[in-house]
Length: 191
Ligand SMILES: C[S@@+](CC[C@H](N)C(=O)[O-])C[C@H]1O[C@@H](n2cnc3c(N)ncnc32)[C@H](O)[C@@H]1O
Image (cartoon, protein in one colour):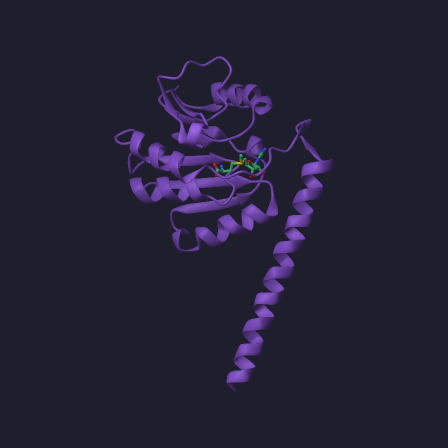
């Protein structure tokens, strides 16, 4: 009986590993060969924990329970979940790569009433449905992101951009984070 249970558990873990590795191979293929909107996909790098801690501290009073957050390219949804948990609001994350998408689904499983994760290109999401937007992307995407923000976001929308700023909008606040000599900035914009 116990042996059967252990064997079943091992089988489930094995199937999980096979699916996750297949997802990684698919993602690597996408990263090397496929373009979205004519651009190569942004690599998956998560927001560092010390930067996230500063971000959570600096957003005090700027995000409220009635807000709805969109994370552009949410990766494993670490940032989205932290913001939703701290401010008791709701949020959606869009992610193109399968492995981080699966990881985000797992991370937010018990938060399903407040957080939705989509395997989706965020350029196909209407930004007007959100009052807070967070993005950690790469410079070549930022002009397109800014254009979409300017076209779709309602006045008052709070935009948080990690490291690579929007090209023409002026942030109302810039936070400089320098862990171990590495410099990163977080930019706050209000539309
Ligand atoms: C630098 S990582 C940041 C991950 C996460 N936001 C964080 O801060 O930890 C950028 C992520 O955006 C995703 N991404 C890039 N372009 C995207 C798009 N058009 N739609 C959805 N996801 C995208 C990438 O797959 C990658 O996981």
